[in-house]
Amino acid sequence: MSPKQQALLAAQVQADPRWQQVLARDAAADGQFYYSVRSTGVYCRPSCKSRRARPENIAFHDSCAAAEAAGFRPCLRCRPQAPSQREQYAAMVTEACRFIETAEQAPSLHALAERAGLSPYYFHRLFKQLTGLTPKAYAQAHRAGRLRAQLADSASVTHAIFDAGYNSNTRFYAEADQVLGMTASRFRAGGAQMRIRFALGQCALGAILVAQSERGICAISLGDDPEALLRELQDRFPRAQLNGGEAEFERLVATVVGFVEAPATGLDLPLDVRGTAFQQRVWQALREIPPGQTASYAEIAARIGAPRAVRAVAGACAANTLAVAIPCHRVVRQDGALSGYRWGVERKRALLACEAEG
Ligand SMILES: [Zn+2]
Image 1 (cartoon, protein in one colour):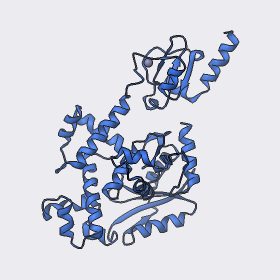
Image 2 (cartoon, rainbow, N blue to C red; image 1 turned 135 degrees about the vertical axis):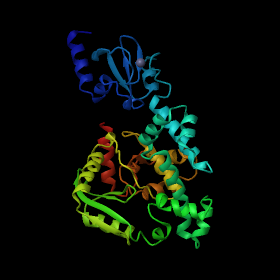
Image 3 (cartoon, rainbow, N blue to C red; image 1 turned 90 degrees about the vertical axis):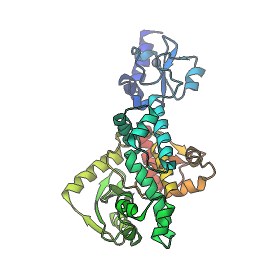
Image 4 (cartoon, rainbow, N blue to C red; image 1 turned 90 degrees about the horizontal axis):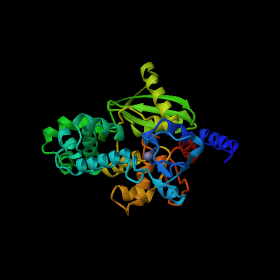
């Protein structure tokens, strides 16, 4: 190869955003692509700790299979075919979620950490990072989901309490505020006496409404018309006290807007997730799809262990009230077509295009 050709190849690689991720040994890019090194004949995951190769020797591949088809063998150091640490962590946290969901009593942090073979401190941090909830909040939300579904059509609150696995009324009433974000009677009354702070703003995707209950962010919605977004919030919580225009809250909204415009940065705010147990399982699975990737409704159904519930999964995606924080925009049809989006299919397209650029 002539020096001129080499310089051209190097410039091409250096202009590719993936090269920056290789230079940074960015573990967040693991699984999204692989790179091969012509001089050694091996291919690596982006986070590989081996010595950096010269850019003119690099090529990028979408999968291990593609790298191998091009004649490269897997690096022995970063073992690109083995699940990455992130994937292992995601699998571990998913397993912990299933365990919490099926346990009679909410398991202790200690017990969960021990099952995962991690320290309680590290497990707690990891769980929160991947789900947005602490293990305790997740257990409460899950039980709350079951309770909420039953309350909605149960004539007797007491009956619903026992159905949802609470041992006694007293314990239920002590915990009701924690699990529902409001007491059972208030929940049935459309959020009466509940205080919700909200703010309207503009972001790259148009008008945005962010609302927060005592429990956490309870709505992130997008649209063309801010007033329509506010009316929708009022319809959802017809009896709640809605407060807008608080300076302190507006600052928090700026954080959410920043996140909506760059989802890969993550949102480190508590979410007030309201839905049935099934919806929460779907939403949980959505949160495990990394930015820049998509999944089909059928894949999500399989991941939550309900492969035939494809339509119900689509329904849960449509019922999501936390745009981007629960990334239902990353779910597409089997053939890759975008299908619907609660906040407009053009916004879905824009979000996916932006994430694909990294
Ligand atoms: Zn390697």
